[in-house]
Amino acid sequence: MTRVLATNLTFALLCLLLCVGGCKPRTSGVQNPGVRPGPTGYTPIDAAAARRGLRVADLRGEPAVRVRVQRSATRLRAATTGRFTLAPGGQAAAGSQPRAFDGPLVVTHDGGGFVITDGRGQAVRWDLPALRIASTAGSVSLDGTAYPGVIELVPVSTSTGRPTGRMDAVNHVGMERYLPGVLSKELYAGWEPAAYRAQAIAARSYAVWEMNLPQRRSSHYDLEAGQASQAYLGLDASEKAKQAVAATRGQVLVFEGRVLPAFYSSCSGGTGQDAYAIFPEKVDDLAPLRGREHGAWGQASSKFRWGPVTQTNARLTQAMQRWGRANDHPISELTGVRDIQPIAHNRVGRPTRYAVTDTNGRRYDLHSEQLRRAANTAVPGDPANSAHTLFSSHVEVTVSGPNISFTGRGYGHGVGMCQWGAQGMAQRGYDHPAILGFYYPGAALQRVY
Image (cartoon, rainbow, N blue to C red; front, side, top):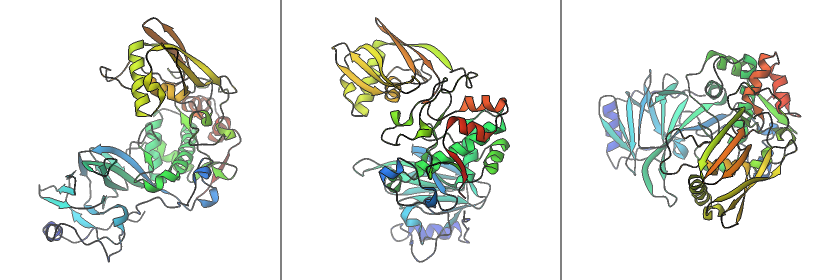
């Protein structure tokens, strides 16, 4: 990435520039030396093509990714060991002049512009579509977590375009600097190097796929720092994670000339799930992403077998109603649960769909992950660490009067690589190509940059 250059402007001059004449600094005429606002290597790709993955031929060099690390924040505190340079972000970044600030910074949004308070307590207001925060040190600490690259703050609006005074924080960073923070969060520190290398390739492949989905073109981020995409802790990565990323630099899983959407989860419980069955709107029925027997490789996980987890019928009914309303699903009209039964399975017997029958005899069909999400929807009165949680959707259900019990296998959706299984294989001496070959049969390893 191109380093953001500090300017020689003093803070007093900055205040004059920003606050005179409507507080809208000129953004034309000077080339922005900051990190590019979007990923490199983007190629127009339609929805049908995206379901099969990006063509390897269309991936040009190491991508820069945009990772949303905070969502709808009202106040953000930025620190650095160097000096800050701030500039307009988003489409306004081109042709803008970065300006120097002394840290730490506190940033809020008043609904019309960013309010930036520097380390001396002096505040300025900058009316921008997005604000880019960089540092001469090459990293920015946001609310105590350090991130490599650049942070871009984007105002959050309602669906009608009304400002909320909240901000998303998005980390713009090169793929190879992003991945160590993924591995350090996704895997345990004591796990084998081969498991780390397998995870590096799977995470890189998954990120390339998600960042090239068509909907990302109109979005200000590519990935979430969490379960919606991949866990990510920023700059504070272990040496083992850094070494695994360096050893596999640019390597991805490829199937039929395209980067494979390499889904993975914590533990499959011994039986893999079909990606197409639970992500039908995202992926095609790709052979390497079909469920298969995983055996006992992941049995060291405490979630290899779990349960029973018991909920009251009233609590589960309310959770499913709330999920249905949020997702425009007919189960919002559920009157109470009479029965839950699997109605479809994949080729190795893992349930792919369930039928929920209510007390009025109406039936609601859900794919397996919809069932888990619906059952795990928070309701008023739930404790912070709910004992109601379903760890996977591979479950057997018993409805008994006012209570419903779930006994399950695995942790997560079960598609692709089982992380606990990868560790089990690594402990037995398998290298990362063998691990990936087991969990993504038919896919090939290829270095693409």
